[in-house]
Length: 498
Ligand SMILES: *Cc1c(COP(=O)(O)O)cnc(C)c1O
Image 1 (tube, rainbow, N blue to C red):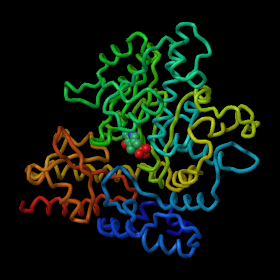
Image 2 (cartoon, rainbow, N blue to C red):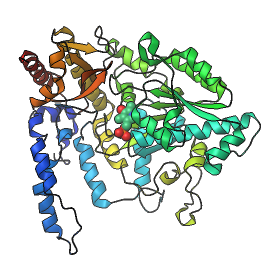
Image 3 (cartoon, rainbow, N blue to C red):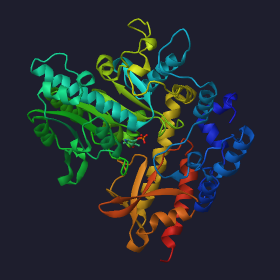
């Protein structure tokens, strides 16, 4: 792709000019991967091989063993996304110039300004007011963003609990969790949630709350395991000597379902959390992009599900999923810079201090995990600029369009069963969960589909039974073209004699 060519700036034109990349040409066979593995060096040479030989080795032995799934609109495995041409171009510039974006140094480089602008544009794309979310930081992905979000929530609930009993200057950042909780009169901090992503448990472990701190507060008994039970939520929030973080799953990876249903519910959750000093964190790794969908009846259920999420305190998102930025890139928005610096301030390093006015861009190292950081703002900046609000909305409409065409086909087909609810398509959001009706076929379904080498899907489990999952996340999806490929494969597989 020639980045100089203005014609390339429209994704539509690009897709029309691309050959449909069959998955067979982008996924290596297990044998190819095994061959590549055997060529790897395991000991560091005393005298290096030199650049020429190393480059040859990589090109000859390693590249064939790479998974090129990011290049194919027919790869429907994990929610990976691809890399838009603008983002891929910018990512190469990042490597070439090897910038370190840890400290805001306004007279030395424009890097922190680019990060600031990229995150502002991202706010606008997601219809959030940048002024309402003054803490905006790029991370390595949604897992890191969840760590940041839970660390902020932990600080907030402890500070709030301390304040309620008149305690001042209590901070987990300064005192550590044990002392701060003791001074705040807290015995526990719980995370109240529904269908949490596995990375949220990991984040809970990392920030010292523990995987066990997750409390399911869902309407599972009514078959709605992703929705909040608001009565149970209030009961849990009311617990004495327990602080709470409410974590909202903004689209769950197996089903694409959202935890919240609309502004009224979100306002209720906000009111309860304010009453009990709780923090609201949204894990919107890929779901938050639903805010870019058109406000039409077709997407009404989805757009209302993500409505009013501006009432939250922190929001996690991934750039390397639906924004189709190369790995690794995520973001975290939150509402208070002082609270953030009380956790992330890289204190006591005078040589890293910047002499900035109050309006200046905060140094990323004081509001996020890393000190030294990659210039991951540039690919984000480039892709948002190149395709704009319309380009991204159109991308998601195509991805959803394909997911719903596939779901509709499965709904009609006697060979397959749409999950978790076969009756309607309005909840379908880039993910299609299904299984084969005959148990004999279902047990080998994922294998058979992937053996076609025309498309690639992932396996999962639903209700204790094997299931299969499409995740449509590539920027290059074309509904008509790609539905044809998917339908042919599903028809072929259904015909197989087992
Ligand atoms: C993918 C995902 C994550 C983890 O994201 P990484 O980019 O792998 O760190 C967290 N939450 C949700 C809902 C996700 O889909």
